[in-house]
Length: 401
Image 1: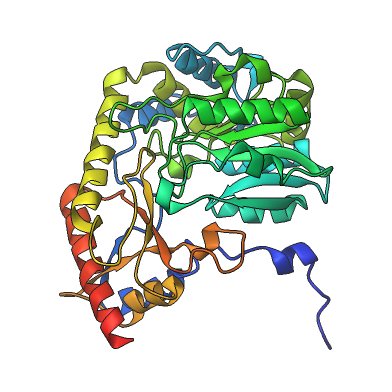
Image 2: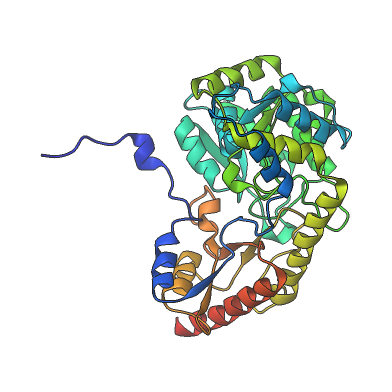
């Protein structure tokens, strides 16, 4: 007797290129191999003590539902966080979500019907593919290039991809997986496009605090002319090294859109309650020194990446401008095979390095086969060790092929 068919969504949703090698990593660990994880954006910086203290002080006998839109304390503290950057938003323009992932999904299903299209610049955060499949939305990829640091193509190329089904443009700024920070001119061009074509601009700004070499990230919330079509998606995961809290937020000044988000939130009841108190305290009490210290740490790690890999034979990438990622061209024909080989066939003194193959960060078939994404989330000595092992592994892999 055969089982019923699974849904088309279930059949079509992409396997995570970041996590699909996890079984190989588990097998390597069983063989006694230790792994430097450069494959996933899991910070090693301790979660601030303010988070834990606030969670503990709000523990009651019953862990109850909270408001669907999020607790007032957190929404107000997020407004305060933005006001320190000169951006004015009101609590009723902020909704708390179950991670940044839910923020992206809600944004897609609030702005699009099944079969609609969202323009997205590839390479992009790989889970956008899965979110779009769940939403029944088509991502229309516009390819950016390593040669210019993955900055945007000309406006004419972007507008040439707009159709009657286009409902939004989706950006990640600073970018995962490339580390690119869009210039004010690039954002202004996008603002002009969405205004002319009456579509939304969806901005994943999870890494907005991670800007290197004195750069300043500009939020789409700063562009007054698109207030009714700008949606920002954010998360505490990377900013406060709190990935497991599963808390994000959506910000929009479009009241009808916010009302829609709240209805979606009511359907899933509420975001996690206890972590919201911890997040509220971090947004409220962590000073500019905290943000400067984490930017300094990641910039130092970025600099180690440049020292160890930039200019090496067959390796190409430009200096990442922000976030804590780099998409790197390497001299292999199939980075999936190389990344797997590093886990199954290679080690140095009982250690190997795990990276993310870049093919899964593209929607265009065949793109990214000669690229990997590195997340520089390890402290400096481990970063150097991981990159040295990667270099040795790359040489041995090429000679074996």
